[in-house]
Image 1: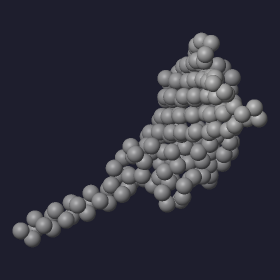
Image 2 (image 1 turned 90 degrees about the vertical axis):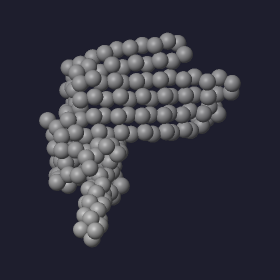
Image 3 (image 1 turned 90 degrees about the horizontal axis):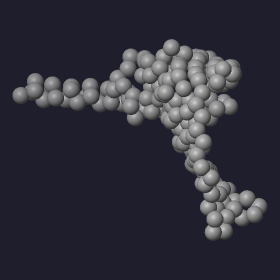
Image 4 (image 1 turned 180 degrees about the vertical axis):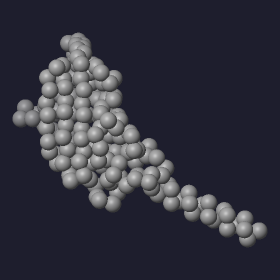
Length: 183
């Protein structure tokens, strides 16, 4: 009987230790690599979904513009819908980011054959202990939904609102989800 209790307590203890290693919503239950070791790598964007809803309210009128960008690994599809109709364009696209241990990152973006390269700084946004959000200077802060040895999922949700000089209320709601694989 004592052996059975000891076994149950041991299993519960091990389960608690493994579950405490999980930081992001979809992180692996246990990893032998630290979050620092997992995040520092060459990452290639495999898919992306972004939606921006821009609303202007003035008097009794409301104008809404919805912009979406959907990336499937090779093609970016951009759609803009407003009160006057919908426009859609597609073009070849790629994005890579190399996150370095010393706190810098290098990004390469190719958008419709136009290549842009940038180097800047990154840091853990919330604390060195929790490490569930990352900030890229010049790009923004993202929540890390999944950080595995070969997969990274970043999300960002922002809402802003202000009133202009004419009394119009202008609001923006932006949501983005990006899935990367290790290069």
